[in-house]
Length: 182
Length: 182
Image 1: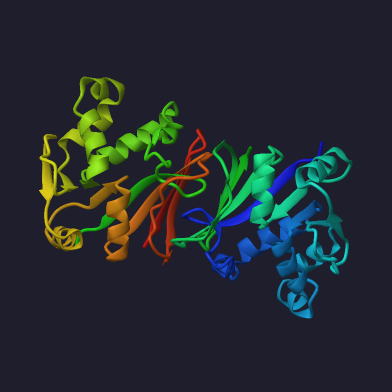
Image 2: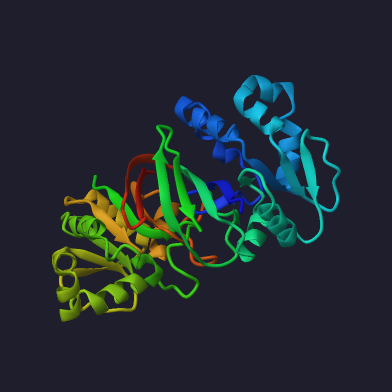
C-alpha cells in the first residue's frame, strides 16, 4: 500500500496558516541555500501530490508561471511534472498532470493508496488533512517549524494522535524539520 | 538585567496544556534517562522560578512530598531549594523559598529583572506567560516538543512574535528541545 505523507510548514504555536489563511510568514528560509536545496530535493522526490481546493488554487496560480521558473526552477519543474490530485466538487483543474478526486474523500484516498504508484504527499490543504487524520489515512507527517509565533490561525489536528519522531533536521535559517510516523 | 526564560512542554500542534488544563500527555520522556538527566540539569541550574497560581499550586502539591523525593530526587531538590515567585492575589504560599509577587504583574516582573540575581525561569503558567509576552518581558523560550497532537487545548502566544532559533536537541524518546531568543 502506498504511504500518505503530510508536509506542512507550521508556526511554533502550531498553526499551518494565519487567521486569514495566509502562509507568507512561512518563507523565513527562502534565502537559506541549504534549506532551499532540501525543499528542492523534496519537490523532485517523485511522489504524487494531493491538494484541497484552496491550496491547489494557490499552487496552480504560481508554479506554472515564468516567475516560478525563474525564482525556483528545480521546485517549479518538480511541481509541474508530478502527478497531482485535487479534492474539489467545483473546479476544473488547468495545471498539467492534475486529476480531480471525486466523491467521498476518504473513499477516494483509500482507493488511491491501494493502487500502484509512488508515495502520496499532501501539502498545506488543512481541511483535507483534518479529514484524512479523522479517517486514519495519514502515515507520516513532516513539519517544518518556522521560527515565528502567530498568536492565532488555522490548526491541523481535529483530534489527539500519538506520534513517533523518526527524523529531524535543523537549518541555519532557524527552520526545524521534524518527521513523525502516525 | 536578568534574563527571563520561558520553559514549556508543547504538543506538535502548539498546546502547552490540554483543554482541561492537564499536562499528563507531556510525560512521554519520563523513561528516557538522557531526557530525564537533561531535565534534572535544568532543575539545578540555579535560576529563580516564576509561576502563575495554577501551575504553582500543582507544583506545591507535588515537589515537597516524599513521593517526589523518591521518584525524581535531583529535580525535587532543585525545585524545593530554588527561590520561587508566584503571581497571585489569593494564596498564601507554603512551599519553601517562595515569595508572592504582588501588584501589577508586568511592573513586578520588570523590577525583578532589574534587580540583581540569576536568570528567572517561568514553567507552565500560561496566563502569566501571555501577559509577559504582551509586555515584551520574555527574553527566550525553551520548548520541549512532545510527539503528540492534542487536537484542542490552551495556547501560549497572545500575538505574533518573530523568534530566533539558538539551540536544539533531539532525545531518543522523541522529545525535541528547541530554544528561541525573543
